[in-house]
Length: 289
Image (cartoon, rainbow, N blue to C red; front, side, top):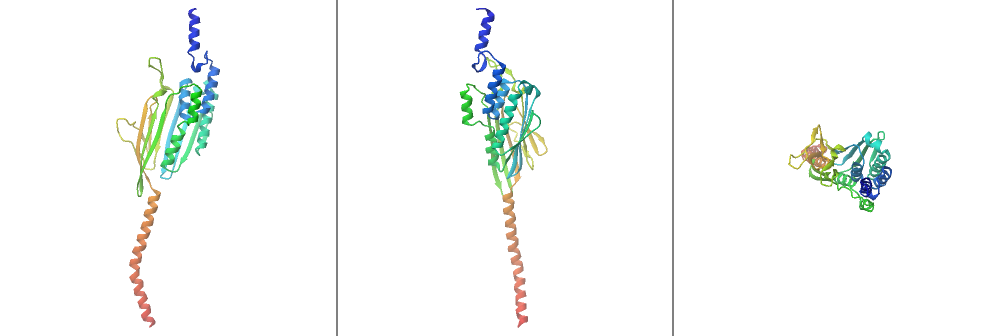
């Protein structure tokens, strides 16, 4: 067998998805079918491994009060990625829009390359549930990927919020872990072929009424302070650990305090006015006699 023939045979057997000779059209169709079935993080993994381009992804939590807030996400797809396969990108964005509506959120398109997502939450538990649900695949989706015979990078995204009530105020401790170490494309000997940092720009922000602070520990990613907002520049290809502590007013505690003040004020006025009213009543009785 000639060297050219052996090279062609080797190329056919080593092409992805077991499709034989790599065909860009067939590969694009396979990706489209898969994108429709997957949620955000797995979709990002496939797009970065098999497409060429860059995605700017900003995830923000706007914590207005103990009982009101929003998860705000902004996605910007580069011209390079859109030019390569616009249909794949559009299917990806549409799948994100469907998932947002399922969680009671809203989406806004700015052209074909930009998408803004807003998902409201009512309290800390609601925030934790919606955030983790949005970024995690269901068992049925994981089964679809397994049946397709594709091994995706393992990406773990977990947000936890611990709440502590102190009558008028509520202390919140937010912990977010995002493991992106598996996004890098490695060679057979373990060398990094494609740096995920050149494909993905990911920011995480927290906006609170009175600001927040991040503990300075060895394993904690340090943020940039922008007024009452903290912004973390997440590192693609690494395990990111984010922590923040912030305080918000407690409407329930404030309401309870107001009721207690009214009760105390009423009791005080009663004790002060009771003797005067009693004296006035005696005077009126004596005059009537």
